[in-house]
Length: 625
Image (cartoon, rainbow, N blue to C red; front, side, top):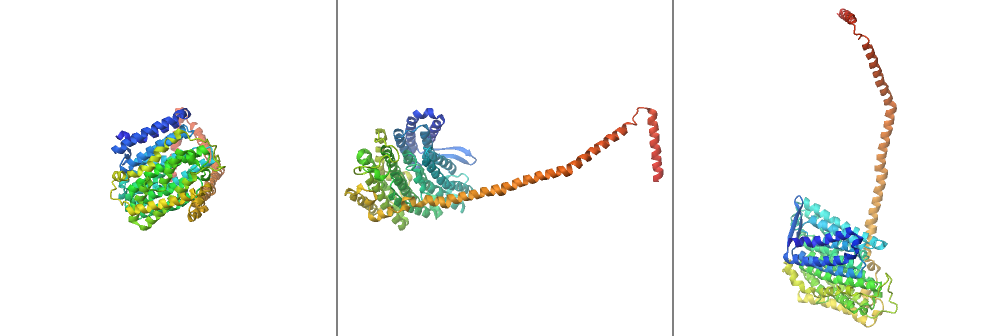
């Protein structure tokens, strides 16, 4: 079983690396290989979900490369693997994708599976980094086009900025005495360091899950291929942030401040990004904003201690949103547009695709007995037990969720107008192949029935004591969602659906959605550019000038001074010293010549020299005395 756990991570990563390394020769077999690998990973995921194995290997002193499957990670490996298989099948049929796309996708999936099975911060950090790098490459897959390339860079930079929090958290854990960096031991960090540790983890998780104020990167990520959106923004990339918060829920609760902060960030994101979704005229942008909003329920769950409710919401959202993104991609390929006004009649043109989209949209609206209704209500029940204000904010999110889901459904109903505006973004094929439709049905079934997994999820997580929604609470949220959906659909059937989607909404909501601030994602990107990017670049330019003019100038001045000193030393000291040395050498040679003259080899001359020397010595002694 330990081998299966290692395999669930290693098989996709190694296969992806091989596809990338082999290059173009692997293009023809990349799709079937990816489908085969995704199938194997799903089987391995089922095995480890049942067996709950652990595995570890020494990495550095005191810290292991640890993997383990518990209740939460068992759910996650199954969800990630199942959605991956559906997305890979769709991509193989819908995209002209080769070795590069499938190689990057498989490495990304392996990194996500490592993320959800990691037992310590170092393993988590390594997986987090690989996942971020692969997501950048996948969003910017069409790198030869300017928009996807810049959007990929924007998404990467925003998430990387938040990812610094993981490094801060790891450093705080070590400084706080958690030398093994084990996630389960993080609450034992020393006071002060524990707060810094929690803050780092929260920032990293909120950035990855596209919560306020980081949400705008998800709008840019929609420039990537539709299968990438379906995978990254349903069960993996944004879900990773929600998963991390659910994983560290005891740490959030123990800090005293982090739980309420996270809960309110999630609740505000649910409402505001729901309004942003309502204001969109592009289907993928609507789904992206709704992703931020729906993930907000998971973040809210982590803040109020509803681990089982948040997990159920994560599972339901993964099936629902991957389905909706894939349908949006299929219509984009067939009709050459994803504008809501141009998608009128798409559901009638392809009835099966329209039917599964309707299932996904109604699930997203939170209608009972579809899956998101159960996850959302479990979260709201826990919120009500903690704070009535949070519960009211959650109910406001229910209203907005139902409105944008119904708006998306209205957009594709009815008959197409005479000039629908096809082919505005790319030439449409006017067909949706059978293989493209193949993964949509199981995803629709999952979106509809996964609410039945509420009790198994609670049992798997050992969360039987969490608050459960009362009958009144379930009726309130269900009736509110149904009322909003009917308020949108009934006028549409009365004849308003021939115009734009927004007039079909209640007047107050329709007026709110027309606000340009909402359509522009609250201006978050402009704020980030103006308040973060531009000052950072200005500071970088100032530091560059300081380096060139002050630091580098000082270095150049020091070098010039050294050269000048060397020239002065050469002119004023070198010549006299040289002459003095030469003079000493000449005097030594002269003395040597004088010393050789008495050395004649004649004995009588040596006697004479000795007698002269004695006479001089005697004279010296006489004079001295």
